[in-house]
Length: 471
Image 1 (cartoon, rainbow, N blue to C red):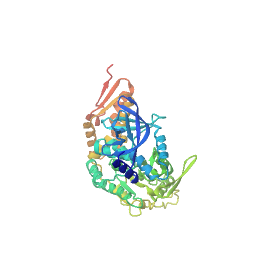
Image 2 (tube, helix red, strand yellow):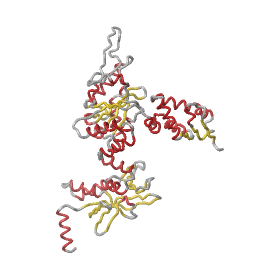
Image 3 (cartoon, helix red, strand yellow):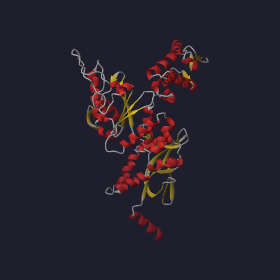
Image 4 (cartoon, one colour):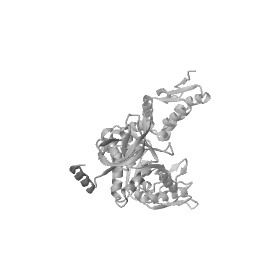
């Protein structure tokens, strides 16, 4: 080593500029994929633009480039970890890192769009596979493969990176959804929640045909915000708060902190209106809902051996329902008022309605526009409970293809829009449309391989095409 190199070496050591990387060796190569295993840690220099690492005059490519012999990964992660743990000897940290990495294979492949991707597969469990996350990898994709949207979204989610780009998301919402003003209100409310010290809960009112759920999903997916959807009533039973929060923890991979910082979408709140038949159970459901709207800590028995305290003050609650205009007039600052039944012989405590003060906990009530033609088209195309997707899946299980062209869907959407159909009306129309051909298939389930629905089928369910199997 000459004097100049020695000075550079000493200066790098003094300034703590030494960078580290994990070196991987090709383990096996199969058609379309290459598997690597970690073999050691080296020091050198990371080139983030080209994703290369140079050590002792030898340059290694990152695993994302599918090197044929040796590659590197985890440079920034390892370097930052070692620097931030100055009191633990570097050699010990390196051994710990290698030990944890050696439980996995690192598999280079290409997705269906020919974008490179590295999967991390457990050695003990072949079904346990995830995407390799590194900060420099995310930046690399954004520069080199902006079309790899699915991989970029996965990397953002893995990084926990909040990406509330208001301009970009707002533009996307305007392009895709008819409720433009309401989309902006929902986006602004989510932005306020993540930039304030207290929860910013909102209530969205409108028909189930409107894209309430789709707007929330679109915002959260683009911003990398975890969200979970629940209905207050599932299969004719009220979803209690304890069950809801337990499911939320489970869906958060048993990460309580992640569950506490999520957006909780609670639909069908209007179905909790007190009824003459079961006011006590519906009232209790409303009281429990009020607890999480107020941000109380809920004590849960998560399982037989574990109790947790769920802090609901960190999460954002987005309530949804479908109140009629007349009912909406009763929503004032203090929400709906439950009027006591004055009949002397009545055993019920309340008339139909919502408990007083429940809506105090929503900062904003957003009224969606009435469904338009685009809403009906989107609903029929994208929602499973609209009836079309469910029926496609049903007939697929019978090895029968259900063909409904875009033209037929558009005509069905037009018919539903002109008749101002509700969700139940729309489902009933679709089931009635398919009832006669379904009966024919049920009589001879092995005779047919395709059911073609035409525009005539919408008004006359005897007009359809059933294609027999060739043999």
